[in-house]
Image 1 (tube, one colour):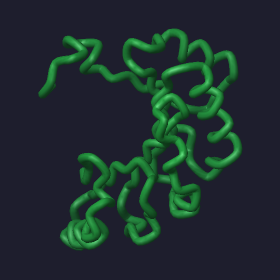
Image 2 (tube, helix red, strand yellow):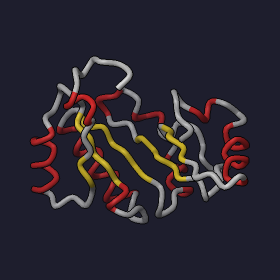
Image 3 (tube, one colour):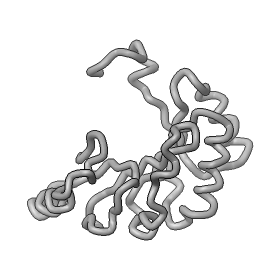
Image 4 (cartoon, helix red, strand yellow):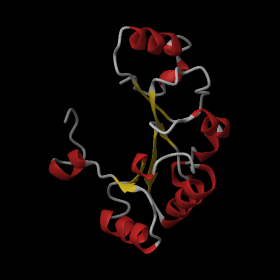
Amino acid sequence: EVTGGEPLMQDNTPDLIALLLKENYQVLLETNGSKSIRNIDSNCIKIVDIKCPSSNESHSFLLENIDFLTQKDEIKFVIGSQKDYEFATSFIKNKLSKISSNNIHLSPVFGQISSATLAAWMLEDNLSARLSLQQHKIMWDPDKRGV
């Protein structure tokens, strides 16, 4: 998995991905979508973290990146409030029709919104997406590093 900060800040990331794919590695790229994914090989699985309003980074997402997503790519929304949830549901319904609901994940911000609350909203709206939990924060101290 190519990750860490924003990997597409490095100009050579698309070349690295292409080389790894050529060597028959399965390659995943985790990105926040603030840089274009146009030049990322379509065989690379892209995991795109679309920032919600409470992150104060929702403006940084390049909407054109939606055009370069495939059925195998994944979308993540980290939900910290009802406003974030409404943003995510609108985005899913209006812009992500070609992405499988199995590949759309909503995760609560630990300590800001409970997983039960987020699950209730998703069930109430019959939202076709998955609830994802940060299991390491449930199993261990949420501030513990290296787990």
